[in-house]
Amino acid sequence: GQQLNQSPQSMFIQEGEDVSMNCTSSSIFNTWLWYKQEPGEGPVLLIALYKAGELTSNGRLTAQFGITRKDSFLNISASIPSDVGIYFCAGLLNAGKSTFGDGTTLTVKP
Amino acid sequence: DTAVSQTPKYLVTQMGNDKSIKCEQNLGHDTMYWYKQDSKKFLKIMFSYNNKELIINETVPNRFSPKSPDKAHLNLHINSLELGDSAVYFCASSQDFGLAGGDEQFFGPGTRLTVL
View (cartoon, rainbow over the protein chains, first blue to last red):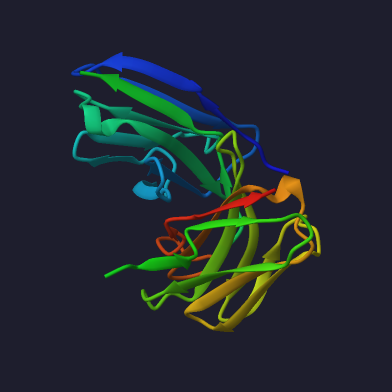
């Protein structure tokens, strides 16, 4: 089956710093999605990407769909304490079936 | 308004019991899913239903049986619970199935199942 490698596994940063995380795959996807999960909650969609090379922003978040269709990255600028959580990438090739990365746990120190 | 709701939020039960988790979405979506998140936070899809029809059935023990009485509901019944079933189970829904822009999934708050 398709596998997604998400890195880094965890990050400990100071408030105000920028954050970068990425997902890579050995196979292509048609859609990349980025989710954030806070403790005790379900994942919430942050950004959706549908086209190779697409660069999309949502506030302080920016994500890109890699040209090869095998990778995607998510950047968070000027991090704040409420950015803490687990960030998941998800790739879709076939209808309705998302393959999730293993998550990046972000800790922001005030 | 809660978009995707699950009940119960916590479920503690003994090995061998049968239990059900209910899910409802009020978004008018056509597709619903069940995911399992283990202690390492890995999210794995279990089932997907589109318009009450089973579309995706991953390698899940047949002790797990989803039931979709209508498009807005997808319940998960688990027979003969085992210790390894302990996890957080998430229900999710999406508007369309296989159409660009329709695959974004909205997740419920999760049900934490603990099997003793």
